[in-house]
Length: 581
Image (tube, rainbow, N blue to C red):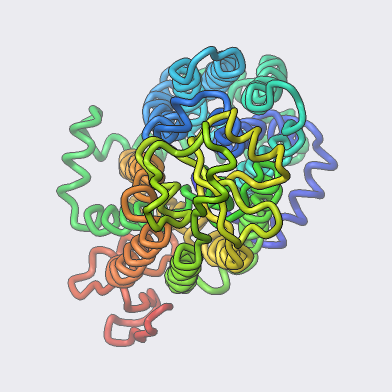
């Protein structure tokens, strides 16, 4: 969903375990910074369950899909600003202060939301959290990368990606744990302040990134930190390696000439290599979001309710499946991305996404078609709570009831939820009255026999997405740009990802209201098919290529993304694989 990680092979993970055991200071650095990834995952996942109870507490949220979307998406909007601002802060003030400020924003946002008296204050808290998420998404992997021994860097940075998906899974567990506690959503949102506070304390005791210190000409401090990270026999070699790396970096920056952002961007876009790489990188990032993943991550319990499961508790318990599958998919990706290749894995992933979105849309279409009718007799039982638009002469079913302008809910039949039920005005009173009769009260989806098929399709969609489109776009963006333009191009692609995320998040519920749930998933299926075609024709394979070889591939006159580049043979000797090489 939402952050990228450099992946590592099995040998690197074995070396990682060995070295962190012998050098525990490395583990302390990585764990402390990695809490940022955990917070990133938690704050993007927790709102999915909390929203159900915010909706119950505030009638304005119940009635307005736009308000619900805004509560969810303002964290994404804040993340866009936080990511951009965080990049500047990282270079200006260092990695450590940036993480501390992100923690302060997390903590402030958590407290504001926990104490919020109105939905507007919740939105303000979400903006604070979003700023922290954006800064953490930029800074935590960077700090880990620069404070890690080179030979296990990929494995340690990968842990940040795992902590993001682990944080999302933890959010669903905590949501479920607080369903029976007074204050429900306040605890769900407020508890995010605890790990933020812990990280703040831990980071105060840790040093700045040695690489940043070295670039600021604070070489003695940088060397002292390196002596804590590396075994004594390797320290001098690593100090020399760091010196040579920074000298090379400064030389590359000098070759660009213009140091302003606009100057760097103009210079980058004048290069055919950069334009081709940027097209591939941005398309991969936009496609990652437009296939609809964050509708699942942010609205998973709501989707479960749309599938016909009315209970908040049931919706959140079943949503654990999607979060767990997403975390497992991140681990699976580590095993296959270097074997199958980036391009092939993305294309296979998109084929599965299209298939299961169509199945999901078809399932919701069948559920809507078989929605139970509204009965005049059943509705008469709740005479003073009837939906204002309902007329006994109208032939309504549950779907008509839920689409009523004044916001209504369907109170299912007492004996069999598939039999005709009552259409009532939505609100605490009608919900309590319905539940008092041992009935289920539906406000999102209708009772049906297709719900479990929808859950299977949702799970299969996650399984298709997570190992491919979930991680590969970030890997492609880490490999496809020339080193001298990697910062500016990576920033453009990251902003494209967050903006696409915001568009999808802010429109999902409105689309389900305007088009219907089935049509919305069919729409995402169509967009995903279009993404499959565009990725096929624009994103090359970077597996196994050095940075210099990627640059040579992109600058060739007969460059074709669907042709496998082989640096050891002439262009005539390339082979064309489906080319899903």
